[in-house]
Image 1: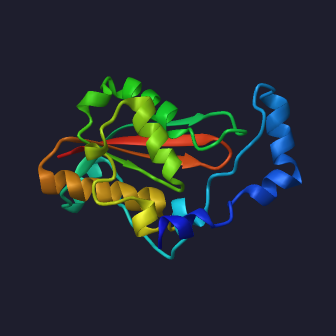
Image 2: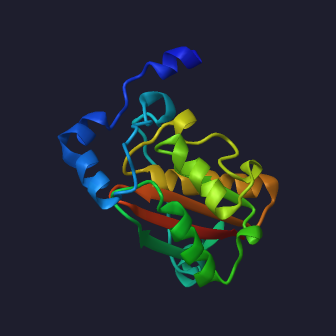
Length: 190
């Protein structure tokens, strides 16, 4: 691909906008003059086949079964944001999870942010003040694909693998969800 080629790709949501979504958004945000559709297949993740498995249980049951835990879930949070804007849920979900955990953004060693669209990660980093060096350190969904239904488990597994590899403590995985929702989970490597 070239920048010129990517620039010629058709916007992903333009048709939905023409079917009435743009008019609804413009009514809601009267200060906006027009809507420019910027999401294309070139700055979006591919929908791919994939699967992931994670075993979650209590410490007592793990001991009973002779299993060695790799991490513990510190906190989770789900939030909703304006469904007209969408793609902004990860930052509010992260703030809520951090508050529940009694942690700050600086306490988190690595972040996995599902990037259905490149703008999700960019907005998250800006809103949360997170440096690029801590986010999607092995590439995100645009590089690896977005297996719907498995993505949350897959990025949590990727996050834990990297925490172990680097011998770090805390990681946070977050996703934006259709309709303006966001979810975040903080784990601690043990």
